[in-house]
Image (cartoon, rainbow, N blue to C red):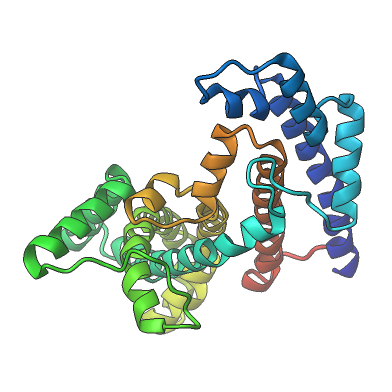
Length: 317
């Protein structure tokens, strides 16, 4: 097991290196750069010498291999550089937004788990009954409605019925928990419901498949209580694909909620991602892509380790 963990951790290095090379080259393929974009908004003529000086200050006049090496060398020293647009450290730009995005992802994932696993299991046990149909309608509605549109409906409902709107400015959970939760609960519900629909469908499908297995009939024939049959034999074997779906959704939530953050006025990682790309901020975009890539790789690693605990038949040698 220790050898497997060490091998997986070492394999993260070439994967992240490949991502770094790819994003570095793709950003340079796009026509234009941050200097041209910055001066494009001015109405006056800017001489080429001024543009060249700005590029030299940002290091854009150096060969590509040298720019890439300087960036990788900085990462090896845990120095991700500074933003080309704001001039602040990338670690600072990410840190002031990571708490918000991480809290939203964790709350939405928790809501998705609370909704999906019981509802998916119940739908499988009550197959083709009104309970099953109601849960399927509930999950299909979640798949059909974008989370940002559901968020808009929530805000309008609170405004029309109760004349109340959630706080606009983000407050840390450690400063004022009540104010923080009053702002974060609505986007967490909107996003959590959207992704619980996927997990509910997956739970129902896997449970239906497991319920038809021979060992389930054998357990019932031996007189095992139905609750233990469902929980120990059924859900424990059906949960592996659900864990995979929930884990990947959690990784996606850290950087993929751009429109939802805009609706609820949340300045998170998703908003920062859009700003970095539109401003052609190479260093910030590269740092954010590496961060999201690392989260996806690490979540996959954790999911693989969870497999061995959830299913005793799985052993990594």
